Image (tube, rainbow, N blue to C red):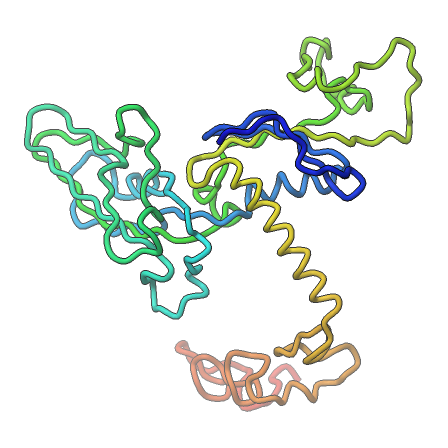
Length: 337
């Protein structure tokens, strides 16, 4: 990525303005202005936790004679970054019609290594081999950026030890588990000169030593000696430092973060404006409203997972029998009376 420092919006009055100061394969630094802190912080939170990526979610171990326990290896495998290019074409498991996993909602990777020599054998991410059909040829492949081309170390084997397993990688977001996080860290800063005095109470001895000026201090004018404090001032310029964990490039993290915010706003507008099919467009099963009485509860199974007007239990009968004997609630009578 070759970016020159640039403004991505020519008219500041039309909306937020983005100025990129640095961009490479691992990080992007930019300034966001002409907006409010609520939007800037929303973008930060979305980039951290709500951008879909792919990570190993299931591990089926066939053989493991290493010194590491199965659970320990499975945890390490889940933290290996996988390429998420084309992730939009992959379904979430909850959206797929398959029983457990298939090529439409997952990527399968195999690992089989056995040490036959006297030297210690290192098993790394490069030894994970994608198999079966995939959306494209890179989705789910381990991210390898080290000069040796090995990738993250998984385990070590001595003579005669063996590891054989199958990994199932699935689509997810970091809000579900941190292994789906697209970014390693996101720096977020505003008011580098502390003109708003938001840091006045966040120090132990000397605020100037504990809060040294950041690199963004040169981007803004320092406060003048004796300058009166503006009680109506609010932060207007926000500085981001987005570092990728590997699944997607750093600039794509920003783009996907904006896309997620747009989708959330579109869904909110739809719920507030749509009126077809019932209240706010919702025509699914719902609880009876206040003062509506209990007539709606006679619907056959609309409000509970069991039919028969809602008094059928998961053990059969009319709610009077369980695997441990009769209960005082069967037969439609209230045993408390």
